[in-house]
View: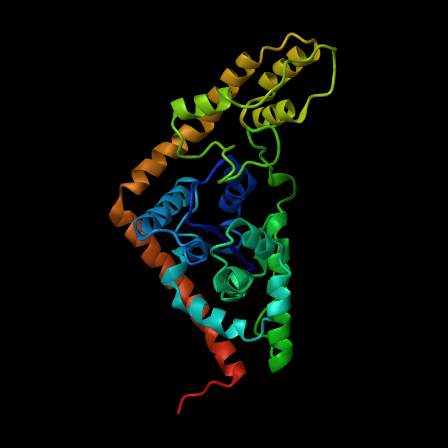
Length: 329
């Protein structure tokens, strides 16, 4: 059985893009793959979160993971910092990672521009920590977006370099898990780009009905079509894209017809879109609230997940240490 790994930073909330782009697919594959899902709290240290926010962020993402359908009985669901073997492997892999190749990563260059007063070593070696997350479980499939392709390539490079340097086959070279048509790109409400955590253009799984309605009603549109069957501007096409994801076909067809004959009222479109988003997300929000407030259940989940993850990572680390030449006296 192939191994799949995915993680998400412990900052912000999960949004529709996370849910339709990956989480729904993760729920589907839990029976056919050995799955590891984690909350990447160590990664978040690159931005120096305040201690009062740190644990809260982990708790929020964990609750949302579980509410979206990830099953701790089928998958290992854990917090990154609960698996110290990952940090030891990170140290070992840093020794065969080169400053030049890390400085050339697009993500590092972007972060240097964005946080000029906090260009820490963790930002530079972020791809090595990501490689450690993946290689610790010898994962073969890693679902990532285009912005993470370069990091996954570095993970393959490190795996190949380690195996070659020490004459072993400890690490497989992970590849992107392509969900094909099952991976849906959800656009943002700001008229361009994809929905994101920090862009201020998202609907979050924890949003209540009033918040969702307010966000959707503020979504960017235009003055409306003046020529029948005219091409939609990107902002309007984005709303129709979201509508096609959350609504039934007859609803989408109705508003497309209204657009094509120039009789569409964007207010009506937005009201319908908000209602249909609520139908999809409010049951998830209810589960999030229940799980978030169940400390005993959350403790059980992370303990169980950490045990599974540590067993897997410890076996890999033992092979890596042996290959390098560490021996007990």
